[in-house]
Amino acid sequence: MAQPRWQRLARRQLSDQEIGRGRHDDHANATFLRRIIGEHGWPDHRLVGEDGATAALQLALHAETYLIVQQLSARAMYKAVQAGTASIREWAHLHDRCLRNAGVPQLFGTQYVMSTNGPVREPVREPEKLDERRADVGLLPAAEALDRLRRRLSAPPPPCGPRAAGPAHRQPGRGMSAVVSKSKAQFYWRGLRVPFIAPWSAEHILPGEVVVRTGRGGRGIGYADELSHADRRRGILWARQSLARGRGEPNLPGMHPLRQRQAVTHMLCQVCGSSTFNADFERWGERHLYVARATGGRPIGEGERTVMAPVCLPCATESIGACPHLRRGWTAALVAYAQTWGVAGITHHQQTLAPLPLREKELHMVPLGDPAERWTIAMREITTLHRVTPVELCDLAA
Ligand SMILES: [Zn+2]
Image 1 (cartoon, rainbow, N blue to C red):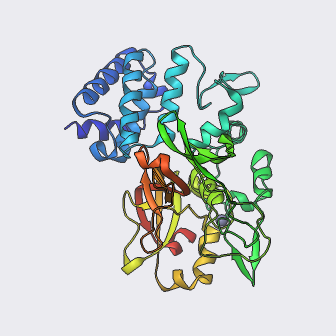
Image 2: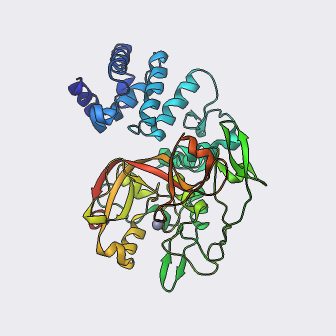
């Protein structure tokens, strides 16, 4: 297909100046993009390669004078997001751009205007829920993103030569990132770091009487004393477990449902709980590090389904030394994005409301949108990993 053209576009890197060079180019690019979408759907990385997919997004973002193409792109890209071949975080930028160009408030707060005092975020719908929506698509909290943008715009160009080492969360940060880091205390148990997601013995599973509820999607289970904002996520009922991190003894291989979900949806390091949107993330071309036990020497695969959260480089390096499982055989990969697949939990019988039996203690896996969602108490968020590149930890640390 139009591979050479994508390569040419990607090579040109499509800087703002270049794209704005002339209406002729804009028109030609928008027409080209519309034809490709019409014939093949969104030009995702499978179709045009990673660079081509980046170029396609840039074309769509800059189709400012061809708003029909911009809107068509956003819809086509969303289908690719649902199919797991495009990044929801990148789509959020395009969606916001469409909303702004339609003259309505944006949803994810990704669009800014330049004022005499630097960048200012354009109007946002329901600003009190902005960070929640941003977290859902893998964006940093709004205040932190604005802070970073301001610093980036005011910073002198980076010097040449070796980079100042160390991930952002280890440096004495400024602004929001410093506040975020401080709230994540590291706990130790017999000299070992206790992972952020591990449950402690004082964190009890709270009993909740399971009852039948009729909600938006039909019949399903709920708690008799349910608080929908705390007990549900995307409409799915979650297990209740108290929060008392650091009290009692840790259950090292276990997972606290809430912290597992937080780590997976906000891309927090599963060991120290810091954001993995750090300096290494930027250095690795906006990718996160995942480390897993290599069952039978198998590396982390493209589209792999997992309950794992990412891990920061210092924690990964330390864990490999400390964890006998990992030392025996571990595998690491850089991952461009993780996509929600569904949840793991305990599905209940639709008449008796009794928990359905678990096979070999494995939780029931319930994909997004499955009717069983309404009969399940979720305990883990499951994602699939995309644009996976296996790496050696020692190469990353070098
Ligand atoms: Zn960490």
